[in-house]
Length: 199
Image (cartoon, rainbow, N blue to C red):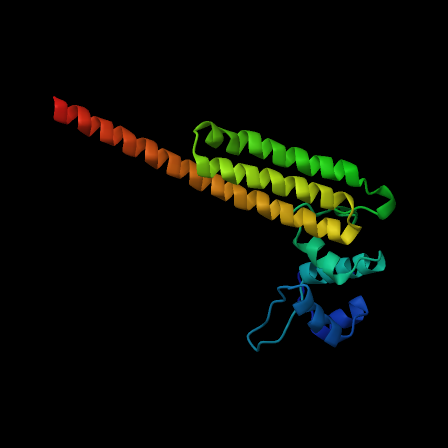
C-alpha cells in the first residue's frame, strides 16, 4: 500500500514497481516526467509519481509502445478513475477501432470550425482569408483520406496533429478577427474625419 503523505526514494520505487533505478531514470527523460528533487538534489517520489509509473507499466503490458504511451500521458482526453480504469477517446483496441467513425468525427469537428469561425471572414470578401480557407479545406480532405488508411499508432499521431492545427487555425482566426475589427475601426475613423472636414 502506498502512503499518500510519504516521499519515496528511487530504490523504494524500484521495489514497488519492479523497475530497476536506471530504468526509472531513463523513463523520466523518455516520458518527460516531472520528478521532484529535495534540497540535496536527490529524486524523491510521491504517490502521484508512483501512480504514473505504474500506469506506464500497465500500458506497456497492454502492448502500447513508448511513443504511444507518451502521447497518452500528454493527451487531454485521458481519464483515470479510482479503479484505475482508463477511458481514452483517441485510442481503442484494434478490434474496436472504427476508423471511419473517427475520421467522420474529426471531419465534422473541423467542418464546424470552418462554418462557425472562418466562414464569416470569407463573407467579408478578403481574398487572403478565402485562400486560407481553401488551403485548410484541401488539407483536411487530404488528412481525412490518410487517416482511413493508417495503422493505430499513426492514427493517434495524426489525430494529435489535427488538434494542433485546429488550435493554430483558431489563433489565426482570432488574429484575423482582430485585424478585421482594426480595419473597420480605421474606416469608421476615416469617415468621421471626412465628414467633420466637410462640415
